[in-house]
Image (cartoon, rainbow, N blue to C red; front, side, top):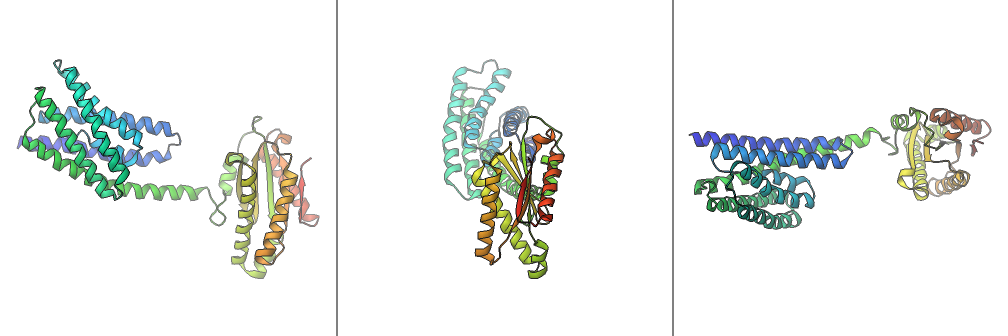
Length: 364
């Protein structure tokens, strides 16, 4: 009865370890610095593995289930982490026993490390070759149970503790059961992560055009304090007579035109600048804002090309000659005050519209 009670405690801690690591995995999608996530995983892996070794040794007089954290690494992390985990696990066991058992020999340490390192090979092959997730988890659990049983047999010969047939059977059964548990729990977590990521992706995007929305424009540009190290070129684009298009052909057609213009602007800007040199936003209604890093002297040429492309493509696709009104400003001319530069671009756009549309004005 005492044995069942003690084994239950160890099993409970192993399950708690799995749940903790899964919850950490879910929360790290909010951590932008990937190195922080990796350091967190590594720290928790070492801490949990050591605790399982210590707890099982003290409660059961033998160590068991200490490869379970590696199953998590196999699930979520790269091949490099699997290799690292396969080396660290027997090393953690060795550190524990060398601390508490002075007669723990270096020869035994080497044998444990060798067994763990060799065990990495089938785990990597399982991760690489087995596509069905359930089969991958069960196969990995079986391999890890075999490594654990073998390492325990090495320690029997080293007279550290005894490891009987009951423990062998329990090791195999519990590793497989925990493999099933990790499979179903990780499946739920994966689905939740995907759901959160989709929500985050849509949070800063305009649903219709896929461009960044006004909230993101505020955060990136308009509410940024003046900074004399970041030069920006701000372009505001308005589709001429857009209301008339909506009134004549309906909002569905208007939405199609807006998406066409947004896609064309994005295609042209993407072709001329690297990804970190620009951001494109839907400001509101039919207005699109392009923010380019640095003072762009060739903006005049870019706008002429854009207007020509929009005109030609709209005639070909919709049998309509779409025109644009555009205002351009530079934050450097406003002491790097982005909001003032934006207002200037908006005033120039308004001037173009009052003077007949189908043109652009660039701040002198």
